[in-house]
Amino acid sequence: MKAPRVRLGDLSVGFTQALAAALREHGHDPQALLEQFGLDAARLSEPRARLSIPRFMRLGHSAIALCKDPALGLDMGRHSRLSQIGLAGVCAAQAPTLREAARALTRFEALYAANYRGSSGLVEDARGAWLHFYSISPYNAYNHFVVDSVLAGWQVNLGQVAGRPVTVEKVEIEFPAPAYAERYEALFGCAVEFEAGANRLRLSAESLALRNPDHCPGTWHHLLELCERELDQLTRTRSLRERVIQLLGPLLHGREPDLQEVAGQLQLPAWTLRRKLAEEGTQFRAILNDTRRDLATAYIRDTELAFGEIAYLLGFASAEAFQRAFKRWLGQTPGDYRRAQRRASGEAQSSVASSTS
Image: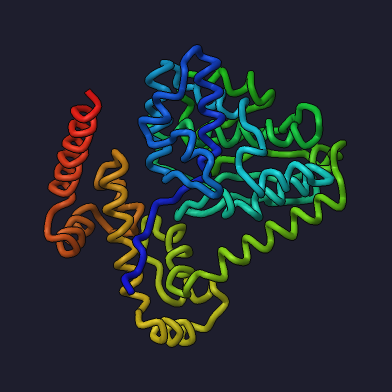
């Protein structure tokens, strides 16, 4: 059986509800834009329906162009609701404290979003915790709004759990301060540091201990059981090859990871990983090459990243090394491939336009 292609990631279509609400606030009907991206009422009603991250980024970019507000992501965050991310969100809404809600949002993230670059997390210490969002760099006009909407949404979501606004101590954001930088402190109510090492919110121990006035112990534990069951089902069906691919993403930043490093993350001896992969009919080097090839085609097709940036994200020593590998994989240069994809996309759009005129 042919191995599935590696994807950049996807997320619940429920995230588009906050975008739609933000557009309405700006005086625009979002229906036509959503339908342009295949998000009609039937699609939005499907349980577990997902939207690819590149498609979500293009949708957000189109929404920003429509309302002419580059800070639309911050408005999306204000309109975020826990129920929009499905079972994990409903579970977090029933948590006894903000700490447990944040733990649920990060532990069960795979139920509503996945990104090959990594996952979100809660890092706790004696004085509080950092709630961090995985990197989606390098940044451009298509992805600032994603970080904005997630960080602003987290603050709003935690406030929904506490039944009152939650103050964060600090916000750190990886990209440089945008033209609308003053809107961050007005929204978050705290210092915001740009060009930081991560995208994250700082929560005090007092905030983490805030109680949920709507908490019901029986409902909470039932929802935890359901989330654990879904998460177990999701991870149990993954082959070892798929688990290796999942680990490669965060490691492919400016360097090439080796078998020993991946084996260590899987808590396996290198020889055991090699043997188990052989039993599945594959090898580590083949998985690494397939992952790089699939991600390369996705980046070229679905993003505006320069080839040098793509080379770095895939762990190549230089853009030239990446271009040689790409030509070996697909028989054409990255530039030829991107031009062909754009021609095909333009022809498809023309076909749709002519059929509806």
